[in-house]
Length: 521
Image 1 (tube, rainbow, N blue to C red):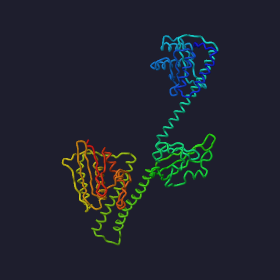
Image 2 (cartoon, rainbow, N blue to C red):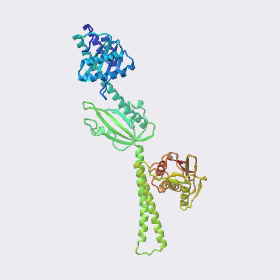
Image 3 (tube, rainbow, N blue to C red):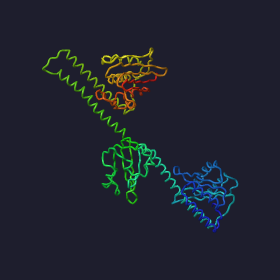
Image 4 (spheres, rainbow, N blue to C red):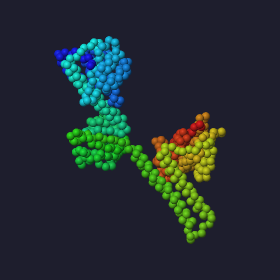
């Protein structure tokens, strides 16, 4: 058996004082330091360690030590694994041999090791070992006192571990709360604000120091609300008894503290006390400004596409019905003109459908399939200008390419789609005519293509959004021109699929220039 210390009965008061000091502390590191200090004093030892069980791998690791250097800890951890393997077999003689080997590995002066297992509710928490330079045989009283000390120590360690886990969970929840992308607001039963996070501050313009302590109505001021507010449902009996009814959702336009307007959706969830009484209300706040904007854009898009589809279909049906009349004889010129209109409108339908399918595929796959070959952008530009110059008598077209413009690896069909879209927009948004210049330049590393018009231009605040899906510039001309808001979105996707970039420079009333740059390699 292990040699135990000679501990006089008159020192019981000292033991009780130590136990009170240990159990009065909840911070685990401090508890272990007090336990170790008391153990070394009680046993008149020179070295002491406290090892705790790791919940992940079930092994014991030194968590506190006294009388040794830190570089000894890895060796002690290895020795602990050997000791625990022997403990599982119940061979106590071999266990004492291993403890003495551990003592010898620390110092040749250590002659005895006193080990006290820390067990709580039949669950091994750890091991307390004190090494000393002499041997003393224990009596029954010593054993009982040490057993009592080990039991009380295990309780203190267990409580400290619980506190540590609770504190870690509290810190984790606090970090989640503060760094959540959604705003969080905690209210008491009187709707006073107890806590908010950073996202709340950014959405509402209220800093936490100013918001905490205020009533909900002082901070959440709706300019427009789409249904009953929280106070209305509270008056109807929500949040009165457990279990609560479902969470309550409200959305509308909020007046921020700085006077700006933001669209928010707030989900209120009730939180009850253990007695089932109303406690707190947790509010999860989401900025739905972009969602509403996208929804509005999509509604406009659906309306526009419906119109864009209806017009060519009506023309095709009208000309086909006219040609099919049995009571009329049409000369060949009328027939050819009518068929030309039908063909042109069918092409328009096919182009619109192709744009819709391409946009849908880009959204689903996040990429554009390319078929690469050597092409020259200056030649593609010349071909597009030649086609478009016959479509408008009010515009003049100019080419501005340097000599020896290099070929690049790219998808000719896709880049032709880009150029045609830019030229279509240049004509569309230059209702008074003017010159449309198509040109480019190159360096050793890339080529740049541009389309410049002298049209109405684009406002500064809209230039960053014109490449968004469904977005159309908000001006009087937009309502008079055809378009789905997909053209520049597809242009940007195609250019980025080529590892290129696209941008615009524009001055309202003086025109716009669209640039895209592609790598030569």
